[in-house]
Length: 248
Image (cartoon, rainbow, N blue to C red; front, side, top):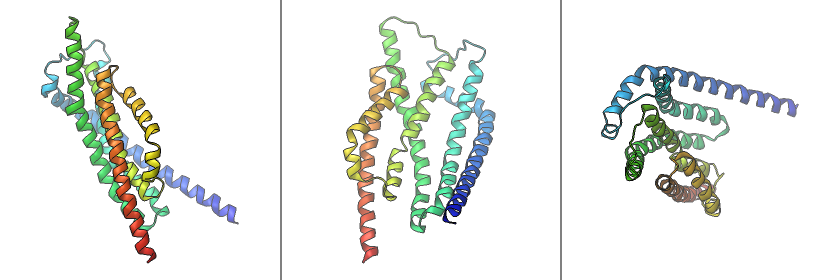
């Protein structure tokens, strides 16, 4: 009887997970369509920015335009789907959490979304211009004539915005895992060397193939990890204090 109940519970969980994934998929598809509709306006806005003034929007293939449309629409869809997806994940996890844990987890949703936007903004307004200036200076130093297409420009930009926006979620993920008791500050400190290696590999993978670009991305990633340890330590202390007060 116990086995049957466990199997039924597993089926219920899988059914609930399927429901949440369907909702997230539908939201993503709807926002993707919206992204396609507003892609021309978004691209024209990006083109009007000072950083894009020095780049001629050439196309070197018939598919360049549609590729940029798709990438722009995907970025819009991710930005709008992320908070809704986190809410659906919270609804899926809620039955297994206490009321207090559910309230705490709900607070992470807006914080995580804000951190994603901060990461995207940091990439676009700081890292991306620095990389363009550095690579342009290198090309000028060897006498190269820069002739870029819009596909190269936006591919480089989108390849930075989304991964770094996701990486900026690290502090809130660590905070959430600490509140659930899965992660502790002591464990994070012990894993520091391994974590640094992983973050360096991630930084090299998502940055253009030059040392300065790697450096500009890796340093913020390491700082985010150290901030995550500080956040985890404060959260862990508060969690321990709350448990002591409840026992008293």
